[in-house]
Structures are given as C-alpha cells and as structure tokens.
Picture 1: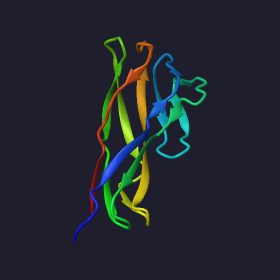
Picture 2: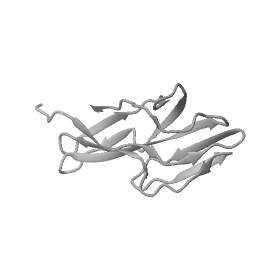
Picture 3: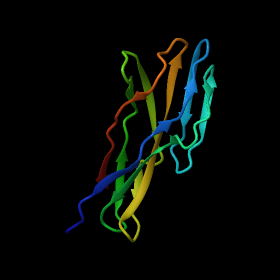
Length: 136
C-alpha cells in the first residue's frame, strides 16, 4: 500500500504569559486547546498578558482518514534567558491519537504546568520539546 508520508508543522508556541511568584510554591497551567485557559495555584499570581497566552499548536498532514499516534514527552526543562535558573514544565497533549480528515489533516495542542518557588529568578524562560507522530 502506498501512503502519503506524515508531516508535522508547529503553528504556535506554548506561552504562559506573565506570572509572579509569592512566598512559597506556585504553579501556572495553560490547557491544551485552541483557546487555552490559564490558571494559577498556590502562591502564584497571574499578570495581564494581552495576546501572550497560547497552547502550542501542531498541524499533522498525511493520508486522508488515516489514524495517527501522537507522542508528547511528560516534561521538559525551561531555562532562564541570561541567567542560571531553570524550571520544570509538565506537558499535556490534547490527543494521543488523531483521525485525519478528508483533507488528510488534523491538529493537536500541547499545554502544561510549570512550578516555581519564591525567589525564582525573574525574567523570561524558554525551552524546547519534541513531539512524535506515526501511523497507527
């Protein structure tokens, strides 16, 4: 059987916007969906982030109506830009499998939760993670 090779394209980055630590441990979560919800727990505070909050969005293209497996790592490390501090990011995916449509496309989203402590180095944190797709 001849099939179309799978391809994947990132359409948006995972972005938590701005948050502030409090005296203790806090978390910020961005849900894995088109219009993600951003929440804080513990002593974390959310700050206004006009347009800066998004789940990562990936478009998968392949054989029409094919089943595709999606693998996202459980976590990754975020590094402070210009500093020596880091944060762990627990990742969540909107799907572990996809059913491609008539056009041979579908999308999935990746969100996550990051935990930080009082005294966490302030500034921007960045990181990468690898997603894997395969035909079922």
